[in-house]
Image (cartoon, rainbow, N blue to C red; front, side):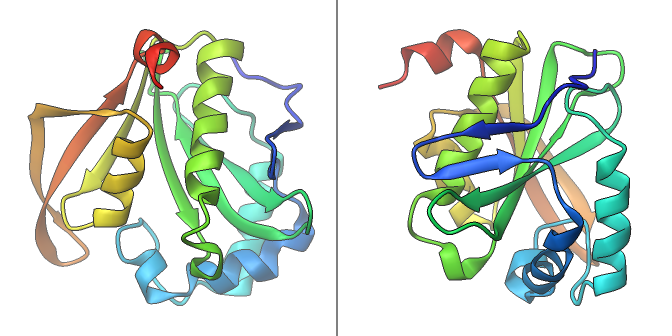
Length: 187
């Protein structure tokens, strides 16, 4: 069931919130960076018009809606302004699961913001939304993404590897999984 009352999640350094129309320029800017788009579903450059349309689309969405992607905007508490996003999908027919993805403006990389944002969203879905599994699919070439999910304690499902065509090239993708029990037991 959708969380129609969602407004934001706060951590020590971040605010994870709904997108606002004023986020479109920064969203377009980091989505237009080829290394950010490389393992994602969009192509760079990502126009301001596309970003504005996306903001409109997200305004009508809510987290925890089966079959619909929802993206959380990520900004720093001390210096507001979009630095990245975390995307989630509750698969149709599987309301206990969540697929998660993430993007971060490289200007803010290496400071733990992506890990902090993903951890906050995982906590929200386990504690506030009662989910039984959160998964992340990673391209085996995307070493920073693999490092992030492993750092957070996600476990790679060795039977899940998929060989697929993505953006004109063959690649392998692995599924990483987290359960509420594993999340509660992590260091």
